[in-house]
Image (tube, rainbow, N blue to C red; front, top):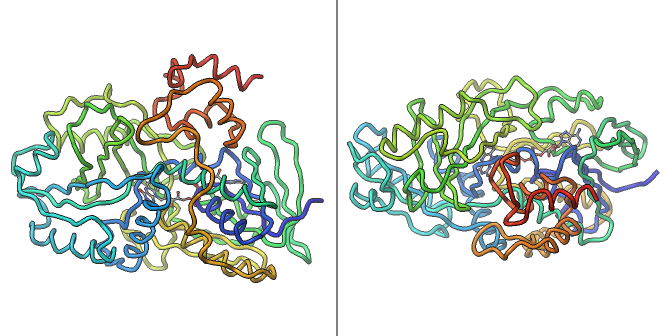
Length: 456
Ligand SMILES: Cc1cc2nc3c(=O)[nH]c(=O)nc-3n(C[C@H](O)[C@H](O)[C@H](O)COP(=O)(O)OP(=O)(O)OC[C@H]3O[C@@H](n4cnc5c(N)ncnc54)[C@H](O)[C@@H]3O)c2cc1C
């Protein structure tokens, strides 16, 4: 039976961030995911590296400051995967805040970044309409302008994994589901099964780490890991809209009638709109947006952009994910107010479970586990290794000028970027936002020609 120091269950940003840290520190690790890496929550975020402007209302200053530091770190480390974007928070005569209160909030946000953010500004109505011509001018007083990061969330996850796999003794398997864990004297025996041919394999691990996000409460009891439910699962959906459906030169932050926030973020030759917040009581794997959720977002857009040419035809595609928020004793707030803090659980002396937090702070969260695990394995933990650049870039960049895709490039991506299915290639390696079923060609190459590579 093959033996590893650590088996990580779950290949979203937390699993891939952790395997990188462990691999750089010389730990032998196997990461296993039931689907493609980054195919669940970590590709379904609002794609922002951010401190979370709205958490100022919750006074989560420590979390905001840490997240802003991480945002500025990744903007430096991976400029091919993220960029800094101007955000506009419009103020109307019915808005909760006055321009001066907004100015104070934005000052605190910049202060918490140690003034590493590009400086904020408070604009008047005329200046605001120049930046966001589609906004309703009726009752508009102005807008707060601040800066946050936009990221290709799926690809940052994948590139953390590629970086880990450049180290000896680290391995990763997609499309394998962990089905059993048996405690032994030296650790665990972990069994996983191929989702394609149902073949099972068992390996030994000194430690098992679960980075299974929103799936954790359902999974752990099935594996007989001592566990009581810890999650508040909150579904959020997004729309990719055609570029010309809203005229906005920067991103816009809309406050909804139910006191939530919806972001409108131009990127990738389209406009990303999201998100919603609803409790989930259904299967969460590959979760989809419902008609009701899509209409909710369209109605918010129609309120703020009454003259924009918006309809269901403006929608290129939709996606959904589930936030793995950690329950707090005695708290009964609305989902949007549940804290984005993370927690690390130790169901027994050989397991770790990481829950909650934000995509932006994954490096800090996984570091907490790595700095405890590495010395337990008799090695010295070096915390600064994760500050280095990622060494294997994706062949097709998401932002900026893209090279012309050729069939040879596709073969190279399949060979080097851990691709198993056509969807892995199109959605996460090429970052195409169209619905798969609508695709006639893959960046100029006929779909059938690309699909044939997977049948070969
Ligand atoms: C709508 C929405 C918007 C968000 N926006 C932002 C944002 O803009 N910025 C930000 O910082 N954060 C944002 N977040 C939060 C962020 O996306 C999550 O905190 C983060 O992606 C969680 O990553 P994870 O690795 O824990 O989970 P996941 O990415 O879900 O990974 C868990 C993995 O476990 C695997 N798995 C489950 N069961 C098994 C099994 N039995 N065997 C093997 N594998 C298994 C799954 O296949 C999955 O890939 C948002 C979240 C949502 C839902």
